[in-house]
Image (cartoon, rainbow, N blue to C red; front, top):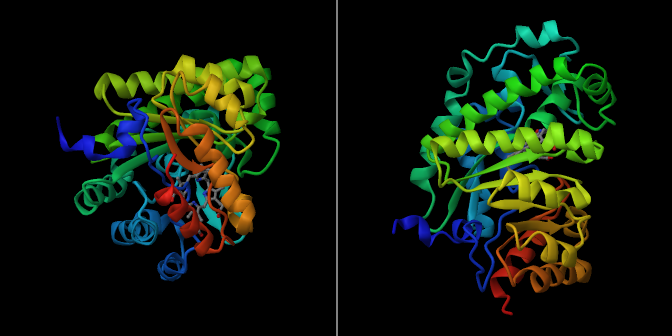
Length: 347
Ligand code: CP3
């Protein structure tokens, strides 16, 4: 047995029920932390920070020191993939990501996968350094955006919309749109394989925009691409635990878990806890699902939500997390409070 089995997060992802669940928080490194804002202020451009190992390693470690989470998620962003494929990507302060939109098959053909590893070599260095730096009980998580969610940003040019342009394209010209998805399946697969070779011990695929699709479209653009990536990564690294996150998929989480065969499933806060226990935990390890607004609110509402999640989901394979990332205005004390409640919890 290797040291990996000291790592609670990996044990949960391998199907074990632990008396105290492991925990981490999506966006645990971010603007809600004063120590993050300090480092962030030294770098004008967010992507530059993602590609600067010294800075990315430092901010990855910050929440570990403060919260003693069971996992370190490498500091990066899902949009490094379109950037590495040659699309223009910018992060505008106070607005979010802006990309030069791709609207035609001709524009898909101009994307270039050949220098992906070169472009992303700082990410691999970040993982190598983190692997050496983290403690023996902490799991290093690598990640990528899933194809549909990446395609949304690439086609719409931004997030936070109804995803209308991409959805109409997918209906009108599915073969053309499939070209973009296929390129992303290939890019994400080789990216994740290299992350594992650089030190990542578990992977998460973020499909944040899965919830906008109808059932048949969901099969084609969410389940199939996620499944192919899992197959590709497992062909190279059969034992690497993979967590899926088809956010806002409602009852469609169940078919995702069954068909993609991921080790873990991250659920958003809208998923009923008892439903998740009865329908998902028999198939996979469940991760989630504290509402990030409860975390913002704090007080009794926060304590009660944390206990309810622990009470309902701790009887099976489970990782405590949020339903979506920590919001920038969250008081850090509230996040510390959750960490303390989980550590002190007993069934
Ligand atoms: O979780 C972590 O601590 C690891 C780092 C991480 C970031 N982005 C850092 C980040 C991860 C895992 C992501 C994933 C990501 N990025 C997703 C999937 C998860 C989700 O939130 O749905 C998506 C859709 C993105 C794209 C993205 N990046 C958006 C929409 C934004 C703007 C919104 C915002 O919060 O500013 C970003 C920027 C971003 N990514 C920040 C951080 C810490 C803030 C940038 C800053 O510090 O100025």
